Amino acid sequence: MRVTKLIREYVEKSVAKAMPNKTIENCSIREEYLAIEDEIKEIAEAKIDAFMAKHKGEVRAYYGGYHYEDFEENVKYIKKELRLCLPCLRYKAEAKVEEENKKLAEARKKAVDDILINLELGGTKADLDKMIAELGKGE
Image 1 (spheres, one colour):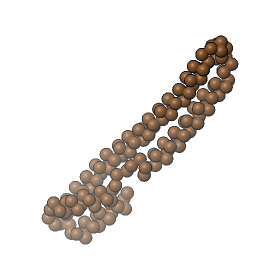
Image 2 (cartoon, helix red, strand yellow):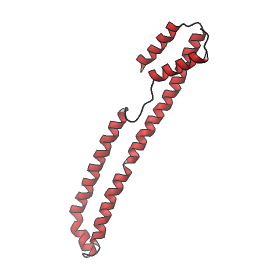
Image 3 (cartoon, one colour):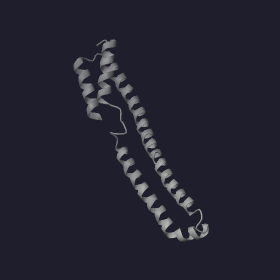
Image 4 (cartoon, helix red, strand yellow):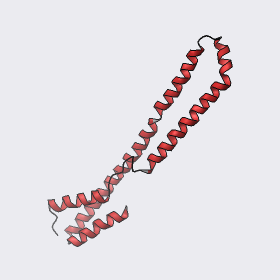
């Protein structure tokens, strides 16, 4: 079968449908990220609160009662910063998904090239449909 522009576009669309890109929502790393984020928040805030409860008297004595409110504000600031830093985990998760999508794009291009070569070497429409169906099963 001679591969025309129309056949090439059909193969590319069919392969893209059989091998879709991953997103953070449909990737297992998303659940992993969400679980870690909540766990880190709980552990860190519990440790900060435990530290404050244990050393509150010492800190108050150190400041002599003055500026203790500043210290409590610093603790609130630390908790806020912790919450602001946690999205970094999501960025790492998204980078991992992006890396997987790059590999998938390479695999998709290779699949398209293989199918087109098979068609050029005498493949038929039935062979084309069979090759595309096999791609869908492989994922």
